Image (cartoon, rainbow, N blue to C red; front, side):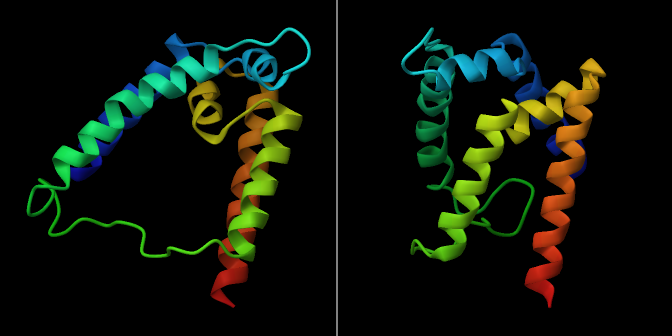
Length: 136
């Protein structure tokens, strides 16, 4: 049941990204172009997501446990360390250069564009490299 619920959530998320235009790298690049033709669409999408997610998390965390698991799996790390700074910098550089964010890129795979597939392959390679580095 958990994989089906995860798939459904992913499909809803991907549909939301597609409907809002966030799978279009030009729209994301327009958001990052602060001194040119700035496009505020991404800010509205993020604001809408927060307006739903924040109250939803507050409500869910009052429950003793999730519906499909024994316990909540929340992050335990609290501090800002070198790994967080490096990861944030790499994420921002990748996003700025390609116009793709991981979620919209995964949703964009359905477009069949080679640029999206190349980005997702590079992202997967980076994730595998980091996993290998942590496991050593």
